[in-house]
Image (tube, rainbow, N blue to C red; front, side, top):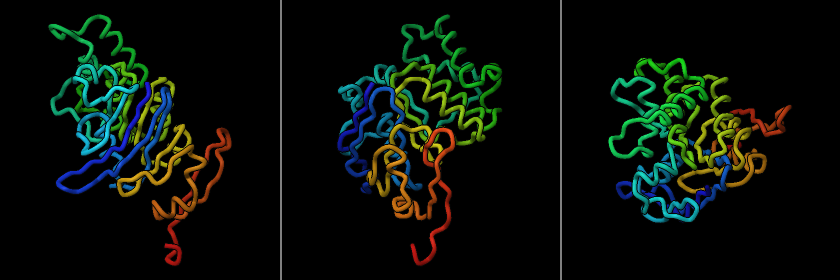
Length: 259
């Protein structure tokens, strides 16, 4: 399923946070948003998963206006893992993942055997099957993140929106989660903090600064020393990953004369 973001702008309390952003994510592609803290990545994603209504512009899924869909229809097509995702009540892990099946349930809302099978399978896919009977609030940050990803996958969407999905994960878990997301075959739009992870796993990157897209394209075209100095304020040295050939970055502070 294709995502088209067309002329999207967001204003909060009179402040324009996102300015006229247009981008496209083709079916099955993993598209990354990168940029400094406060650049507008999360605000943009909140519009895509309908936590915010844009001041202007549209979000379309295969041409259909997402904000015009009812909540259940939209939730069958798009699942999200927000950066601030939380569960206040101490549900079990199995109960948290089962929430991902709600858009597919009718009538009493009781989980069917098929729903339970999907949830069990998704917990196993993220390596969290052993946590099913644990209380969610007692989990570590990394364990919680894996459970929330399982919940999003249990929704069986066509599109997955992830805001910093590797937060709280150790290095092995970061690689596992991004590999899992890529192998899902879903259309994925994700904000990532780690530029090296983004370079390896994303098909295309959009660099956002001050609420605007300032560069777009494949990682090896986008992650240039000049752009990284301008947008992130760092001096970057590019090397090639010895197996994938993807650009990898080593960073230094910019010298005073270069800033």
